[in-house]
Image (tube, rainbow, N blue to C red; front, side, top):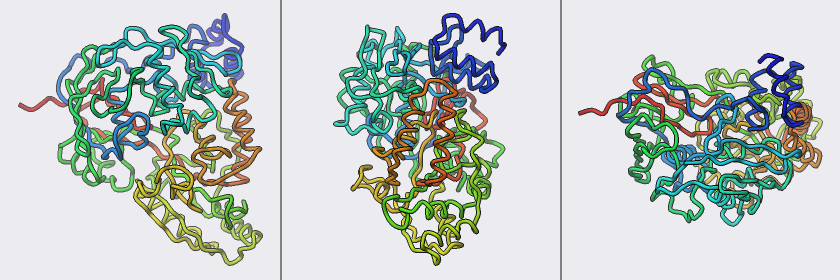
Amino acid sequence: MSNVRLDRLRRGATPVANAAIDECLSGRIDKREFLRWASVLGGAIPLLGTGGCTVSDDAVADRTGGVVRVGMPVPAARIDPLTVADTGGVCMLSQTGEYLAVSGPDLRLQPVLATSWASNDNGTVWTFRIRQGVRFHDGRTLTAADVVATFDRLADPANGSIALSAFSGVLSKGGARAVDAQTVAFHLDAPNGSFPYLVSSDNFNAIILPADYAGGFEDSFIGTGPFRLERFTPKVGAAFVRNDAYWGRKALPDRTSFLFYDSLQAQVLAIQGGQVDVLLHVPVHGTQALLADPRLNILALRSSAHEQLHMRCDRPPFHDPRVRRAIALCLDRDALVTGLYAGRGTLGNDSPFAPLYAATDPGVPQRRKDLREAKALLTAAGHPDGFAALLTTERFQEIPDYAVVIQNAVKAIGVRLTLNVEDQAAFYGQATFGQSDWLDSTMGIEDYAHRGVPNTILAASLTTPGTFNAAHFRNPSYDRLVAGYIAALEPASQRATAGQIQRLLLAETPVVTTCFYDWLTVNTKRITGVRPTAMAQLFLDRAHPVPVDG
């Protein structure tokens, strides 16, 4: 982007927008990050479009008809927009429901049901313009009242919404207010420079529902999207048909069909045998044959998804940060990316700051395996002969294998781990303290999904009041830094605070994040236009479908 155009953008721009322009002109952020920042600011930077939620038409755009068949895991529970938290459930929500915006693979926010958004000067009020001419599948027109009611439900603690992990301390019930029929102002509990991500697909529960929605989503799958429900059979599958009343470009396929499988191996056999055309998501482990199959396309998205190892900071022996650092120093991160993830990932440095985030400070030293230092730390902490501990985790993707890698690695410093690998229902329990093996275990591994910004993971999993603070980490300096990072509107302020957070977490090591894995979706070469997200949404409206047989 030329300096001349950037100078033109200054005309009418807010002070915050001009700060982003200054960063780009100085070379401290590149064009890609400037465009991402502009997408967060919404309409605050004039003359700069953020693009739409759909891809451009290609050679197959006029070839409508047929069916796209998807294989995916069985949704873990009833499909309820308030409580869905699993891969299968998130995918189902995205078939008929839409978000105010979608977080793209490049982390830019793309407008969907909102056409623009802007913040006040300090990030305490964000105002969104709602798209006109949108109808729910039952024919009712979308208005600001529907948006307000949706976020009131999600932010109300009485509803037990999973979205509270993002909204706690950010948005309370009553904070979303209709200015007029097409405008919503979000009055926040505290300044937030990245708030638009929290009402986008990054917050996977946040599909927009009618104001009078009272449950029973599985009966109607009501939404505003390009497909509408044909049938849904719990534990078996679902089918959707083109919504000819859709506000945007009409979907190419006549239908989409989803088959639910209770094992990864069954999904592998289904795509190899031609029963399905797409697999929503595959881990590296157990799918090597697919990843090497020339008949298939592997859609790989860089992500911030990771397996987090937590250690209880309020219980011995992990109450001593030297013990926690010793555990972290036993792990060979390069070998994990190469071995466990077949190279499809990037190194982690024991914080939620993934390399793909522009705010991540690359000057923070990368932690490497150092057994000599690990042994010295353990001795200084009073454990020269090591200790025994129980590591509790979930049976999900590569996690059981990762647990074995950790178990073997720490033997070198005398730490003896017993593994307790549970099914996901037992591990997560009620997902509340005192009723969850995940949150109550002395040492555990949990999976964290991709986010376009690290805010939710920084706050929910590590601040003192964090709803997912399995490490029971309580550090006032950390809490202040995270509040400052989340509040910052300018790139320079976020970047400076991010570096301080990264260094603090290296010193304290309440959690170990060795790598961030790529999101892998597989489809046959008979179709194109499949658009996954690393959050488990799957958009099929531009897919070129397989023709229906006879």
